[in-house]
Length: 278
Image (tube, rainbow, N blue to C red; front, side, top):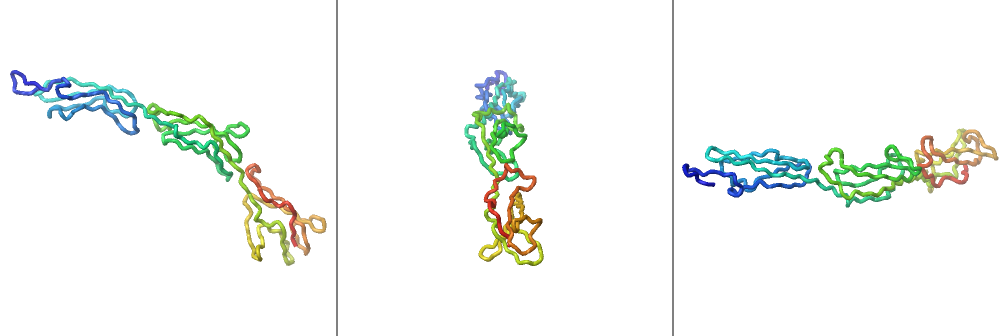
């Protein structure tokens, strides 16, 4: 401030040092949804009647901006020249060095699509390409049993502006997804012997029914399995189910139902010997 010789007033002058007011360059790191601006140092020391207005000084995206501070006062103050500062917003780093990838992942066939799991920061999208054992690229995720090579690529989620980010330490290794066959274990089913009392009706060997310690136990076959049976008496195969009294040899043929692929299932403990129906 200074006093004019002919007036009893204090006058604001434009020199920064006089007011201890500075409009310095500012540097910020980008944060999603956060607006940045350069500010005056010691702005509160401006005289009461002097106001400041900023131009080009509120930004969110990465870049360098020339901000200007304009000052207005009343008739008691000389004009103050505008001040300029550079507002810089730098890119946010997304570091993938801590991304942990279990290179080989194993699951089991259940008729649904399977996916290779990778945990990444929320802003990152992982693209996965699956290649089967014959070198063929799949259109989508794998479902059938087998071993699949997984090609991984990392990109910023399209919802965000790539110009605001640096993606660092991108993993370079691929993965392997193994889908094991579904096990169909037939060890708990009855393929040995059943006895009926003649009642004039045809009888079928019921593999889903077993007698344990005198108690009748029913156990449904897996939905994928069908058991075909042929009956032999006196060395000859009969047509249909047994009706007459006698002892019948029962040959079992365990098959997958139509629509199920053999490569997706491992049938265990299927009968290897004939049963008896009396």
